[in-house]
Image 1 (cartoon, one colour):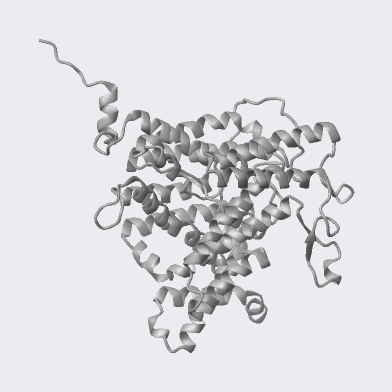
Image 2: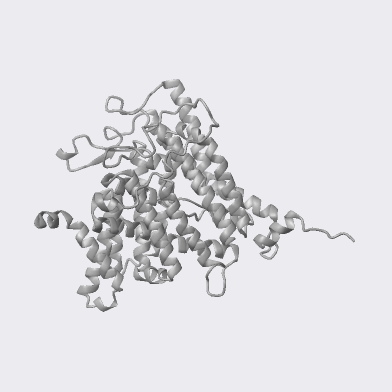
Length: 486
C-alpha cells in the first residue's frame, strides 16, 4: 500500500487558509498582481521626492545628482518586496507595504534639511522601533486614544495639500516669484504669471490623463498615466531638445531630462541600504526637536495603519466580532518593522497601503496575495534604470491626485465645533503655507490644548496631549530659549 503525500498546492492552501477563507490560489495570484499594478507607482515617485532634496550639508540621498535616482528606486522596491512578503507569511493578510507618501515628503522637506540624510533615516528607524514597542506592550491603545480622531484626520488632509503643492511647484505650474521679497504675492502661475513651455503642457496632459483614468476606475491608473506621459515627454524632448530647467532656461525639464537609458534592465545598485545613523539626529538638532520629529513621524505612520488594515479587512470580510482583523498584533508588528526597515534601507518609512483593497476587490483574502505582490516588487529592482527616464512633469500629476484623495477626509471633521475646527484648520493650512508638516501639526496641537483650557475643559485632556503640547511649545520657541540660555 502506498502512502500519498499532499501536493504542494494543498500545502499552500493549508498554510494560507485559502479554502477556509473562501478563495482560490488563482484568485490570490490575480489579487496580488492587481495590488502591485495599483501601487507600483511608488517605485517611480519615491526617488523624485527623496532624490533631489538636499540635507544640511547640501548632499543628496544615495549619491550624486542623477546617479542616486536608480539606487533609491531599487531600494524602494527591495524594502517593499521583503516587507510585503513578510506580511503575507507572518500575518497571512492581503496587505502590501511600501514607502509611505506623505511620510517621505516629511522626511525630505522637514527633516533632511536640519541634519544629514543618515541622521534623518536614523530617526525613521527609531520611529519604527518605538511603534514596535508600543505594539508589543499594548501601549498603542493609549497613544491611539490620546490624539483626537479629527485631529489625526486633519494631519492627513494637511499632508495631502502639502503633497499637491509640491506637485504643482515641481511641475513648474506654480512658480516662486524671483523678487518675492518686494511683492505681497510669493507665488504665481508659471514663470511670468502665465503658463509657458512644453514641460508644463506635458504636466497638464498627464494630470488630465490620471484624472480621466481614475474617474473611469481603471486599474493601475497612476502607473499607466506616469508611463504614458513619460513616453510623451521623451517624444517632445527628442523633437524640441529643451534640456534641463535653469535660471537661463526656465521652461526646461525639472529634475530629469526625458531620454531612453542605455539599459532598461540592469543589476540594481542598493547604495542607500544601511546608510543611517541611529542617534546622530540628537546631536544635530537636540533632544527636544529630535523627539518631536520622531513623534510626528509616528503620528503620520501609526494611525494610518490602523485605519488601513481595518478598511481592507472590512472589504475582504475578514473582520472579527470586535471589528479587528485576525492576527492583528502580527499585522502591526510587521508594519512596525517595515517602518524601521524603510529607514535602514534609506528609503523612508514603509507603511501599509490602502491600494491593497484593489487586490481584495479581485478576490484576494490571504497572505498569498501579499507574497505575490512582494515578489513582483523584488523583480522590479532590476528595472530601476527606467526611473531615471521619468521627468518631474510626468510623475507629479500623481501627487496632485494623491493630494485630492487625502483631502477627501476633510468631510470627517466637525467644522461646527471651534474646539476641533480651529486646530484642524491650522493643521491643514500651515503645512502647505509654511512648507513644513511639523509646523502644521504643532500649531494644531497647541491650539487644541489652548481651547480646552479656556473652555474650562483642561481635565478632559489626555496626559500625553499635555506632554506633546509642551514639547511643541519648546519647539516653536527654541531660538529665543537658546539665546536666553546662551
